[in-house]
Structures are given as C-alpha cells and as structure tokens.
Length: 350
Image (tube, rainbow, N blue to C red; front, side, top):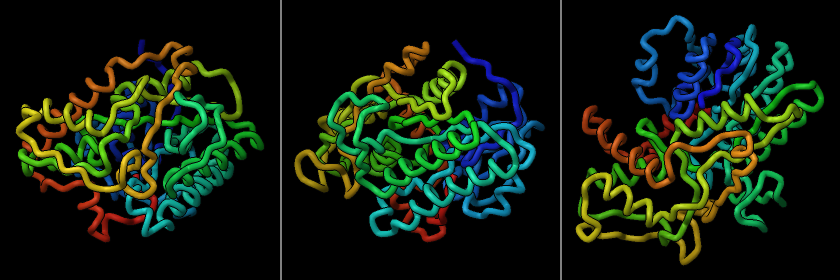
C-alpha cells in the first residue's frame, strides 16, 4: 500500500542527497510544492535531472547553519523534512566539530526557524546508531540507556532531544525515524558503495575494514521512504513519535561482501578478502557501532512491511551502483577518498 499524504508545501533540508532525492520524489508524487535546501556537498551532479524541471520543485543552495538564509528560505512552508547531516562519520574522529555543527547547531537552527515562521510539523532523519550497545537486542524505540559511540551518533541523539523539546513546548507534530543502513542505486557512500568501487577497481582483492563480524540491518531506500510515510500517516498523535525503520535481523560485513561479489558476477574464491582494522568484535573504525539490530514491531503494527529483504536490497543496490559508474565514467572513489578533498568537508551537508 502506498500512503498518500496531504500535499502541503514542504521544505526539505538535505533534499539533494541520496535519501533526500527519494523523499522529494515521493512528495512530488503527492502533488506537494517542495523546496530543497542543500549546500550540495554530498549531492551527485545529476541529482535534479530525475525531476525533469518539475515546476513544483524549487531549490535554494544554503547551509543549515546559516540562520538568516535558512529562515528566509523556510518562510511560507507548512512542513519540514530535516535530512541534512554530515555523512563523513569516520572523519568525525579527527574533526568532532563537524558533527556538532551540522547535527546539533544545524538542527537547533532548523527548529528555531520553524518556530519563527510558524511551522509545526517536522520529520527527522535519525539513526539506529543512537542506541550504542544497548542492553536488549533486538532494540525497541523505548530501550535505554542510549549511549552513542561516535560524534555522529551523539549528534543524531541530540537532534532528537532538541526536536522533542520544541515539539512539546510549541505543540508540534514531530517524527524521528531511526534508519537502518539504507541502500540503493543512487547512494554514493556506505559499505555497499565502497565495496562496489573497490571491486570495480580491482576484482581480485577486497579490503574490508574491521574483522567482518560487524552486523546491522539494511533497508532499500524505497522501503525506507515508504516506512517514513506510513509512520507519518498512521502513528498516534503525540508531540514526538520515534520509529525504527529497517529490515528484521542483521547482515554482517562479510556477508555484505559476498552479496556484492555475487551481484557483480565475481566468484567468491576469485577475490582475496583482506581484513584490516580493530580486533574481533570491533567496528571498522573508531566510533563504528559494531552491532545494531532493530525491533521494528512498532512500525510493522502500523501496516508497513519492506518489499525487499536485506540481502535483496544489498544486491540490487550493488548492481545499480556499478551500472551508474560504468555509464558515467566517474572516478572510482570511496567515500573516505572523496572526503580527503577539503572542499568535500564543509559543514551541514545534505
């Protein structure tokens, strides 16, 4: 079932990003007028071509940490979808200020601007990494304590708290969606993307950060967007609704590697797997939460079910990413390699 939402004028921070593009497409499908607000630091050059110059779509280039530009652009809208966030999670180890600026300062300014211009609905992109290493697995939305293990995760949790405070004080309707690892053919970062890039460069060897046991839920971006929309359409009215969005169970990094190799037509025995990073049970880098598993019963109780299993979502994404690189001739760079360019590290990325 596809939920059709009220076509109100919607302001989407980070709307030019991977998930943002899918959310924008779904809102345009409702008939909504949509403004994308993005600084384009993580956007693909062709992000807007899919909309075929749709007259209902407007674009403002700006950073969510620029109070005046943000507030002016937000005026006249009825809803905010807040997706803007730094995506260089690894880089946060050396540059914690980036996650603070984009995730905490930026979110506070989004909320402050909403209050100033009279908007009372927000959808927020949070993450399953806010749980850290919880006492219960699979983890429900109400489980705690929440002890993030990275600056990125801490910023996401702080963003939830800021929005909850504003929503309670000013009678907003707010939604925080804790995403699993989201995959799709347009993604330009994450383990599936980076494995595809590495194997296209050298189909005989794959470097894997960590020991391969790290395990998380994966979800196709189309299913993620459907989950967001179902939550908005059906969640009980509260100042702040929080919902996990992901497939049940987990897929380990070693399993992801096997799925990606199969999707690219490579025999497992033909690829040398080179593990690098922390010891057994650790993440792939400092601050990488090694194990995340969701209890998604709250969203499923509202009638949402993912169309694709985690394995099918990973395989489809790998094939799509490879096809895009082959067709475009773009440089084969992992997310970390792209981030080594200082111009790619501006705060408030979409």
